[in-house]
Length: 138
Image: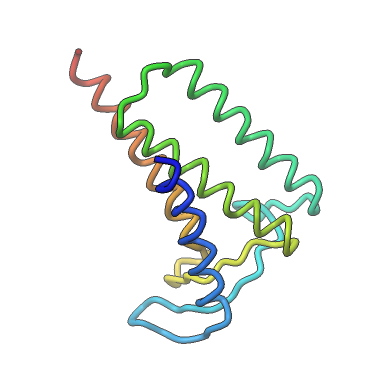
């Protein structure tokens, strides 16, 4: 499992390295570098405060998730790994560059990267699992 987790960060960093220096279209997808100095939803508190907000959010997420879900299924572990290591990959960008490299633009008013896709996929898995467990008694 650690190799697969490490692969999440490596895949994101490689895609950022390759595609952030490009500018082209693939159908409706526009590949171009956007330097994200802030957080999601246009929030920007400066580099140090942004790092602190993200780090505290990750610490809270880890604490809350493991204290409320001590028995993690394989799917739960996958969801957690996607969220945690996707966010960690973006933190690596912010630490070394001072911004996060976003490069995927679908014309929806925001640009994202592969790490963001991992985080959202992990959240969807968790929400799907939670809604399913609330509907179907175990």
